[in-house]
Image (cartoon, rainbow, N blue to C red; front, side, top):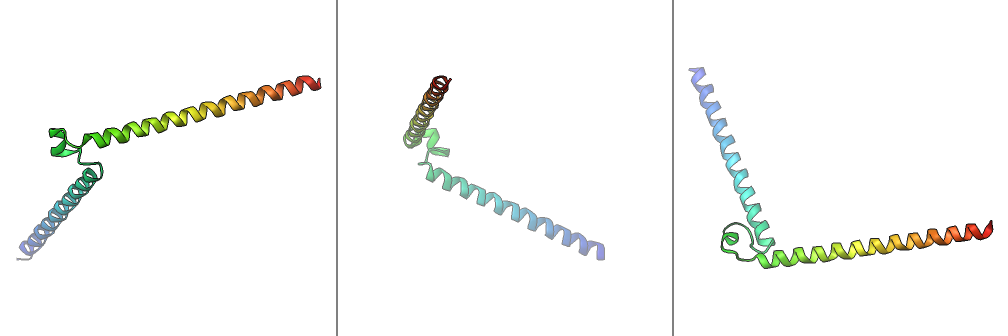
Amino acid sequence: MRESESERERERERDREREREREREREREREREREREREGGWGGRDAARGIGGERKKERERERERERERERERERERERERERERRRERERESEVQ
């Protein structure tokens, strides 16, 4: 008798665990849906129909433009450092 009660309790615990896992999966799906909405609807069914990808592409182009601007700023900083090193070498050679 006790064994069947403990078996039933284990079965109930497995059921509860399966339900918790289903709830976690539903929450993950809701989060994916919210993410698709934030990204302009480009995922899932919309992607198959080609809907909403323009906003994503435009954001990517803007990020690329920003990266290029940052690379240009870095090149300018490097040129300035090189000019400063050159001036420093000239000063040292004048002193000698």
